Image (cartoon, rainbow over all chains, first blue to last red; front, side, top):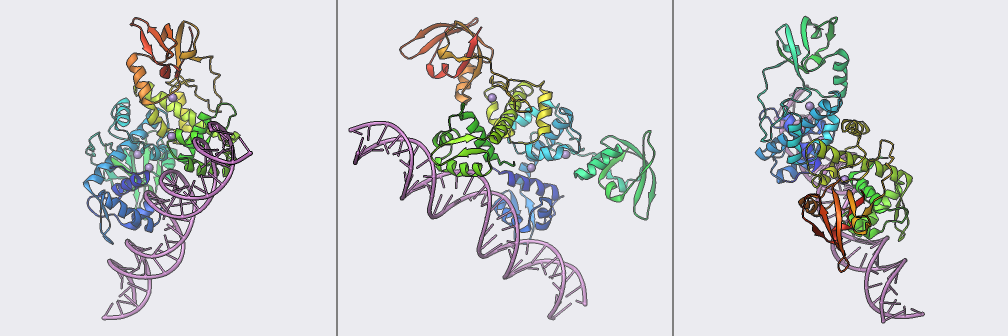
Length: 219
Length: 219
DNA sequence: ATTATTATTTAGACAAATCTAAATAATAAA
DNA sequence: TTTATTATTTAGATTTGTCTAAATAATAAT
Ligand SMILES: [Mn+2]
Ligand SMILES: [Mn+2]
Ligand SMILES: [Mn+2]
Ligand SMILES: [Mn+2]
């Protein structure tokens, strides 16, 4: 199936928003894509015609098997380009998302498979997200929780679930990146902020807004 | 100035067709871009509004200084990606043009400058064409002639002026690439074909159609 | 069970990029 | 210098992706 850039972006966003089987809402998709609900309805009809999604009026959107396959290809391309930018061109992880957002639309299996090989067939991208293989299979993610709900003391950062430039810049400033080890010092119930300490650094306090986007696993 | 992908493709083709100052013709541009003359006229008006070209009805098209600058940026991106594909991802030179045709439209100075650095700031692409630097300056091309007009005997291949897949596949089959040294054995006036010999290989005969697209310089 | 609010869809419009068919201009031939 | 041919432009349509404003459906509040 031949998909336009716009269609690919929709499919990727649907994939992102569709946790499990719950249908994606018109408004949620419009917000995610920074467009208007009316535009989403228009596109939903097109994508249904192309058999990429299931869609009934007022019932929300779900990816079809075809659509899911397409989404995984796009995600694969996106994350491999992010790896390339960080590993080979020395970009920092908060800069790469926008560029990958464009590079992901160059459709060539040969290109992307060679790129993967060139990068050593990585299985996670610079934000800790898993990279689908050439067949669309995702490595089973290791068990992780968000930092605001972690119960262990000593933790390692495994992923960041919000790729907004502002959050990533914040984390960068604080020295928090993938693989960073940290210790929870205190948890303040009042605003659910937590105090953490990185190695060789003074303790810092982090808001719930931030900590819920930092994924960790016990060390 | 913000240019669409279509506009960039037009500008690059105008640059390619405009040797010196001779205006580019509507039909030539349509043929080059595999589109219709009416579409070219439409786009000419848009590009004139954007001050990228000079255009008067029936008078043909010339790049403005602005347009030339844009063209050189696009050409730079195109050729650097071609280098990347050949040098790092082991593509062969006849495969890379199509892919670069898409990659060239990812607009990021930072990306392209880092890519250039990563590649060792190359000054010619895999087809022997010069790569503009970050300021749009082109290395002065070394003196070269097409193979059908060469007068020296011993020559080296410096460029190929037709990137069609069919020609490049032909050259590949014959073992002719950039840097290949060859000797002219004979020149047949009847059809302007020539007989050449590569090192350690039997002589082969090449049509004028081919030889006029092979650029060489005396060895 | 009504009423108000929110979510979603429809209707109609628009810009970008393209096309076909017809009209006009430029150029070459007779 | 007429006439024929070729090149270019215009007029009008189409497709894709988007929008605003209005209509309708679903859901929440009273
Ligand atoms: Mn994208
Ligand atoms: Mn990522
Ligand atoms: Mn292109
Ligand atoms: Mn090239």
